[in-house]
Amino acid sequence: MKIFCYGTLAVEEPYVRAWSKKNAVEVGMTSKPLSSATADLAKGYDGVSTKGIVPVTADVYAKFEEFGIKQLAVRQVGVDNQDVPAASQHGITLTNVASYSPRAIAEMGVTQAMSLLRHIGIYQQRMHNGDFTWDADTISTEIFNCTVGLIGAGHIGAATAQIYSALGAKVLTYDPAYDAALEPYTTYTDKETILKEADIISLHTPLLPSTKNMIDAAAFKKMKPNAILINMARGELVDTAALITALKTKEIAGAGLDTLANEVAFFTQKKPYADTPQDFQELNAMPNVIITPHVAFFTKLAVKNGLEIALNDAQLIINGQKSRHAVN
Image 1 (tube, rainbow, N blue to C red):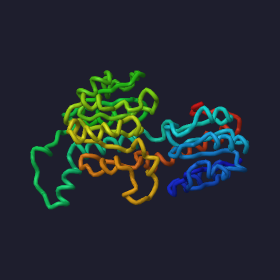
Image 2 (cartoon, helix red, strand yellow; image 1 turned 30 degrees about the vertical axis):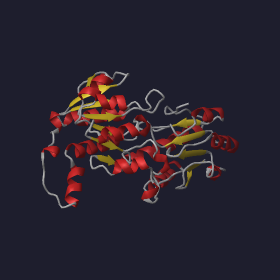
Image 3 (tube, one colour; image 1 turned 135 degrees about the horizontal axis):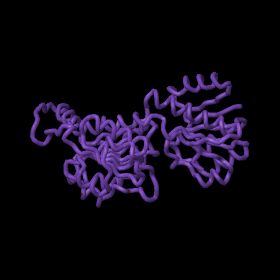
Image 4 (cartoon, rainbow, N blue to C red; image 1 turned 45 degrees about the vertical axis):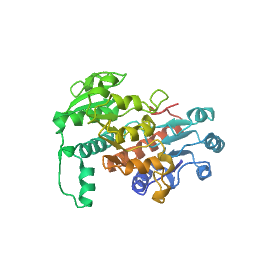
């Protein structure tokens, strides 16, 4: 049996080799993403795993079908960059890693929220300009006096609720699927209540037609002027132009973003800053905005778990078995 890994990070390589040795399976690797230009690298292999950062087009699945490959294990939660109908059409079973380390993403969201709550970016900008003063504009609220609103309560949302609850915050949650196990940490409510009452609003929903731009101009107008928006999920959940306007007009106080709607064009790459999108440059210039390049998942435990789960799924399907992580 042979499996090929696309988009392999240097930090993943030791885990790939360890899994390969443990399972007696040959694993090939490339740092290049899966695309039409790289699909031929998997020829001669029985299975494939990839990061899901770059959109995969129908012709890639057609090539895999030609090669006799019947699965594609995506090493992350989201499969929005996969053409699921096309994969099914070509007999490719897609799997994802639904829970590699929810705590990793939750901790990044809380980290960004706490930094914004304490105006770290504003103080840093001032100090770079020789201004070491403070004033009423940067007085902070302690976290136990805050209301945190979570939109989405899956694995990551649940971990986020537990952390904020442990810090003493009042936690509200909106999710169509009720989970009684979260009752000690949160109170379920509706989205409108969260928009109106929360000091910190944290997004943890999948990207669906019904959730695209769910945080738009109308949503920002309902938020408190001291509200902080945190997006650790998918960039398209937020209307970027509306976010910029809300920040400029002080409808909200700040934003922490690990994902952007147009991130595929420049995240994971090195390029001249002038060539990055204008909306990114505008947001990045604001001291009350924190942007990280989709790295909330990037911890040792999460990388190890994501890789091992994906390769285990590939092995299962190659052997004619079913994976509980199949998405089609």
